[in-house]
Length: 237
Image (cartoon, rainbow, N blue to C red; front, top):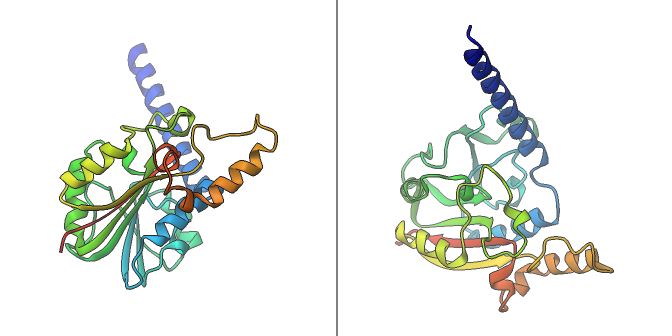
C-alpha cells in the first residue's frame, strides 16, 4: 500500500470512529437540561387531544416519547446503531431506521410529525417536506424545533454538522412552500445570551425565564430573540 493510500485509510477510519462517538454522545446526552424540558412542554401543547399516531424523526434515545400524547409513537432515526439505546429504554416502542427525506411510513398514516433539532441537519429540506406532507393525514400537524439564527449567542448553534440555521421569517416561508398552513412561529428561551453566569444570580434569572418561556414568547423580543425557534403547521384539509 502506498503512503497516500495508507493515509487515506487512516483518515477514513478516524472519521468513522468520530462519527460513531458523535452518535453515542447524541443518544446518551439527549433529553437532559432545562432547554429540553422547555421545548418538550411546547411540543406537547401543540399536539391535539385526539392525536392517535405520531412519528418523531430524529428520535435519538427516545427522551421525548413520554411527552408525546398519542396512542402510538413511531421513533425514526438515521443512526440505526444508536437505536439500541432507545430499545433498552423503551422496549415496546416502534422504532425505524430511516431518514427525514424518505420517511418510512405509509401515506396519510400519521396525525403528527415532530422534529426537535433535526431540520438544521437536513440538506434537501424542501424534498424532505414532500415526504412529511405525504405521510400526514389531512389536517395533520407538523411540529418543528430548531436553533434560532437571530439568537445573539452563536454558541447555541455552533455545530459542524449543521447545514442551515433558519430565521423566524425564513422558516415560515419554507414550510409554506411545502404546502403547509403555518399556525404559529415563535422563539423560546432566554434572549441574547444562553448563559447568564457572569450576572449575580444569573442562573436564577435563566431558570425563571425558561420556566415561563411559553408565556414570555408572546411578547416582542422573546418571540424573536429566544434560542429555540418553534413552528407548528398543518396539512390543509
